[in-house]
Length: 232
Length: 194
Image 1 (tube, helix red, strand yellow):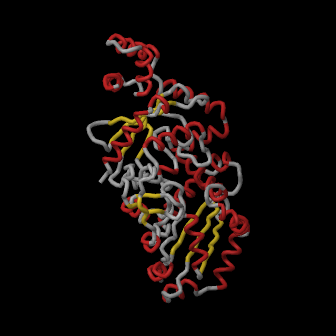
Image 2 (tube, chains in turn red, blue; image 1 turned 180 degrees about the vertical axis):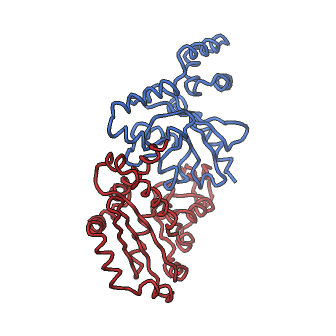
Image 3 (tube, chains in turn red, green; image 1 turned 135 degrees about the vertical axis):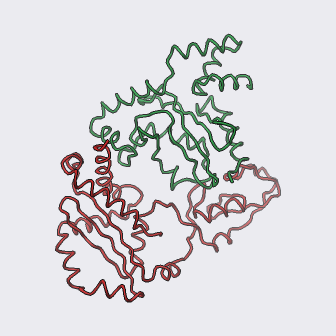
């Protein structure tokens, strides 16, 4: 059982990079050379950054208007560590939300839900049903039409769009709440950190069997990653 | 609150074309929130010939939240835990949509049996075997299907015989038994109501 959980951890860690490359986060592959380049001269680049800003830590914690976000990459093979830090958070936030896109499509904005046009079901052979409650249209009934032309009962689709802003049928993306300002004021002064750990290289067998110590630490730090995940 | 009207419609819809899809959903007990789905193993895969039971629990948020599904039948597959039966499938998590149904979700699980995704594993041991030693993987998966997902032919014949003696035609008895995962009582209920 122990070896099973260890190899599970190894697979998790080594598949992490592949998940970055494959999966839905195509854009992230653009960052890969950047991330890998950092890991190769990790310690030096990290320390350079630190030494150039010796008062960084204290400076930030005392001035809440200037918060910063960090991604900390840990290479379990070399024990190297990379810190990617950002002060201007807009582009960085999008990277984070891409990384943490486990939550699915965020809710649609209130305005966009209210703006959905109401359509009356005419008599002319408009048979069909609401894909959410599976009730058939009543002739003369009023339904909401999404920009993708898919129709649902108003109550049904509003309830869904407040949870996930995508069309239930075709996944057409509704505009999200423009919550940048709100989020910023909420997050002001809060530091967010993400710890990531991965092994470089394609040989899973090696990392699984010859580096058990590292893979255990990889597991624990990948748990940290979840703990520190921002609520994007 | 679970949308019970919708669940009832789904059950009705699903069981109407069970002969075509082979996918069946029945109540586990009295409640509409605990269900059992059965899917036939896809032809041309190590799961062929097996009948797989899926344990379904509907949360209060259904259909705005995905149904909780896990394999009740033991199965050897990279994206299904060989221990717990937990399924790694995006539409059962963040990619759920209320336009999906129990039937379409079960169809997706059936498709997952045909097309494993070893790069996004649920069971790391199975996934590594799938990638490194595919022949052994196929052998193990087939053995698990034989052992856990198949009713032994002897027992099956007995069940068919029993129902035929009650006066149902054999072909119908066989297909109904297959559709209900070889549950005698469920099959009898179905035969009586058809």
